Amino acid sequence: MIKKLLTGAVLTTMVFSAQSALAADYTLRFGHLANEQNIWHQAAEKFKEEVEANSDGRIEVRLYPSEQLGSEMDVINSIQLGTADMTITGESLQNWAPKAAMMAVPYAFRDSDHLHAAVSGEIGAEIEEQIIERTNLVPLAWFERGPRELTSNRPIRTPDDLDGLRLRVPNVPLFVDTWQAMGARPTPMAFSEVFTALQQNTLEGQENPLSLIESASFNEVQDYVNMTGHVRSWIYVVIGRNQLENMPDDLQQVVRDAAETMQAYESELFVEDQERLEQALQERGMEFIEVDVDAFAEAARPAVLEALTPEQRELFDAIQDL
Figure 1 (tube, helix red, strand yellow):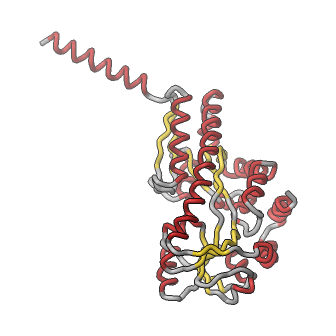
Figure 2: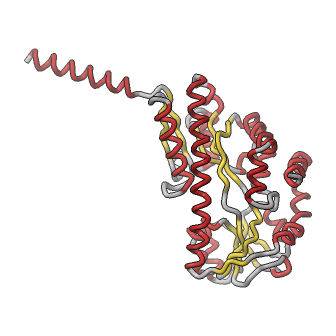
Figure 3: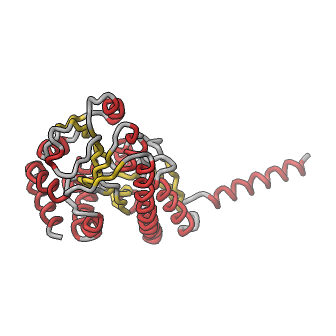
């Protein structure tokens, strides 16, 4: 009996010792809105893999996709309070850092290369500096988002073709003003209501990235994808500044290196996914229309410039000069 008790005590000690040896020094709670099939989550999994391997287990990354920790704003607030550590966020950051509004300004960027040059250069550094200063969040990496495109049941090649098109837009004043300036009749509406409104012809068009056009099955109620590319944007993977700086320098570097690897990995997935989306929508019967992008940008410009603050206008002009 005594032998059994001793054996049990030894085994218990060994188990606790093993658990202590396996316990990480730091845990990063990484919550975001994408589901587990989304390329953002796949990139987050790559980050977890890199961090845990290269920190020799001293850092554990726990992933919480599909808003398990709450909405984007909820997680940002949780990071600032110290109850979460990382998230993926976009133009919501302009609530604190006005320069982050550049992440969703119509026709700020001519194409993908132009966006990459801005975000990877001095302009991106300026935006990130204000984000860190105003939010106490540190951008570790950024992902390009698919451009917003216009769908309709008639081809749209120039602003003249809009001619009062009843168009759903998000409840964003700049989006409403921009589409009005280009000749459409924009109507703010909840995304969940758009399919039915298109089906009933209450609306004639909507605008979203290809990923949402596919997932919402808009191909069932819209014939054309007009390649307006009117909003090119990106999102940041951020970590709480306090959480990052609480780590020793070598582990901070592990996190930054893993973020760099994650960014490159997601970039490859993004290019492949955009090609897949276009092919999938064509196979479902949608026709892709090349538009006069310069004409749309020119028509949108007065509304865009009027909406920008002097600080934002200076940044917008710098982007145009690239």
